[in-house]
Image (cartoon, rainbow, N blue to C red):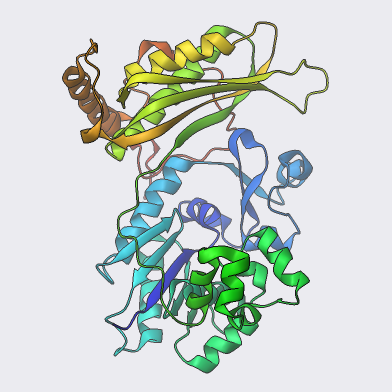
Amino acid sequence: MTTLFALCDCNNFYASCERVFNPALNGKPVVVLSNNDGCVIARSNEAKALGIPMGEPYFKIRNLVENGHVRAFSSNYVLYGDMSDRVMQTLSIFTPNVEVYSIDECFLDLGDFYDIDLFSYAWEIKRTVQQWTGIPVSLGVAPTKALSKVANKLAKKSKKANGVLVLTDPYHIKKALEATKVEDVWGIGGQYAKFLKKRNINTALDFSSLSENWVKQNMTIVGVRLLKELQGKSCLELEEVAPPKKGICTSRSFGKKVNTYDELLEATASYAAKCAKKLRQQKSCANLVTVFVTTNRYSENDSQYSNSKTICMPVATNSDMELIHYASIALKEIYRDGYWYKKSGVIVTEIVPENRIQLDLLDTVDRNKHAKLMQVVDGLTDRFGRSKVRVATQGVDNSWQLKSDFKSPCYTTRISDLQSVYVR
């Protein structure tokens, strides 16, 4: 069976989402900031040209923003998530088999399309996504997923490719591997890159020429799969259904310093509820819940403290009320008065399918009632917004929430944020 994959990657995705609804941003430097407007996590090409690095703290570019040279936006994950769904739905019309790899990347199975003009088909995909969603994308087409990653990276960099590169000819594949640094190969992390470069293995082509035994001895079976992928032998299948997560964490830095137990409890309860919602979405339950708190380690004037507590729940659950209950118990044990807290978080682990939980003979919880209630709550929050229905412990003021001074409207998911057009 002949394999062929296309990797579609959205260009500067977060910045591109902001531009879709504000065309005045086209051609201007745009950056998107992390939680609490801390540092740069996305840049337009114009911002990159100004020399703004990824991870740059906001205070270092504040003058550029205040003087109008750069437009900065707080992270708007509701908007970005919805725009991502629109891109993925558009891609699915070109092949029934797709793997959503990340919020801005998607693998397409084109194994049945070898007999058509692949270059023209890839350009049709690119133009359609841009026209239907406003998001510019790049496509790399190749016989394996790793090679499609190589093709996509070169498609972005090369002016000649202009966003589309098809690698099916052995000569072109060799040239592409030769032009790819070993540290840029999908699956080779920083430590492996240093290890390989010390042995004069500097390009993807150098790596693809290694012996299978040497790679297995030094980089385990994962490295062998990557070696075969770069040699054109497909080892990584398309994952059309994402596997359930083995651990789920919800954590945020606070928008202000927090020193009261009540505020810390509100935040922790809200994070526990978000973990519960994620568990229900993948039809799972968790046995363990961990709560952690920490102060700001960069503040020289504040006393430092951090701690965590893990609780094994009697029965695995995905109920807001139960997770909040046990998270509250954990928080009470680790909370210490007299500190300014910067961050808290909730982690759920020991995750099992919801239809395979081990019940307890002494369990007094009406689990059917909990399940029905959570189903109703999910329906209401999906329709009216996640903050409309909540457990009382989560509070209503939430002054501790993230700072987002530059957040754009939720154009596609909130009626009040719909754009208005006035015609004279």
